[in-house]
Length: 106
Image (cartoon, rainbow, N blue to C red; front, side, top):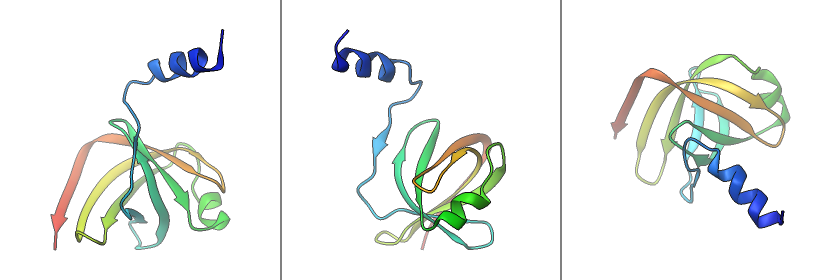
């Protein structure tokens, strides 16, 4: 099987398509600590590139957290309950939890 066929089969297993984000969306935790830049989002969750290895190390798989995604150009904020699926110094994978979603535009 060729590499494109393998990649296509792996992407077919996803419940939600990943969307690359071009805007400067920033993830902030409940305490106001800036976690990093949101680079991908899907119907199931999002990926954050952490600002530091210390931030990534502080987030443990299975931990439930509340994240606010801030989009400075449009001054839009979305607060979302999430669970950490994985965390490394390169990226943090977060899954949306059912329930609370709060959006505001300032």
